[in-house]
Length: 143
Image (cartoon, rainbow, N blue to C red; front, side, top):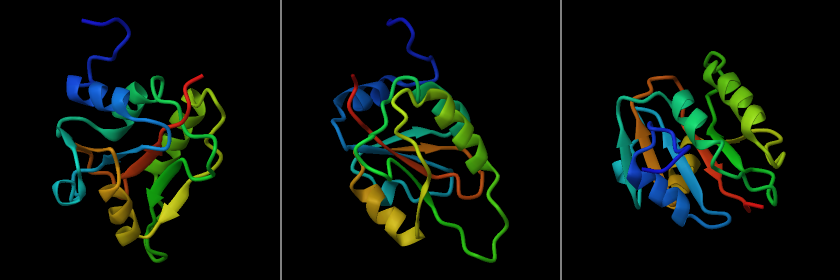
């Protein structure tokens, strides 16, 4: 056992986050995301919601302040309603971003998001059913 590692984080995910280097990124995906088709490594967390997982990850995970797009979301279509989960993400990022790396979300079209996912160090597939809940976090320097 280690101290201060949230119990929600499975050992494989902690290991992958420790292995990640500068500019590697993690995809935290909702239940509908085609994770297995787009992942080099996948961690299934089907009983977890994304905000509770972010609450556990963000205190441990430095965001990349060398880039303007350290936090990426899947862009909604213009005719779709506003995505309420993004404001939850914003509040969590503002709470835990110790390096002030998060300025604004970058929005990717669905297929571009999938392409980015293929390059991610790990995809974490959750059971979250929030519309457009997928988020990419790019790891920065831990100083």
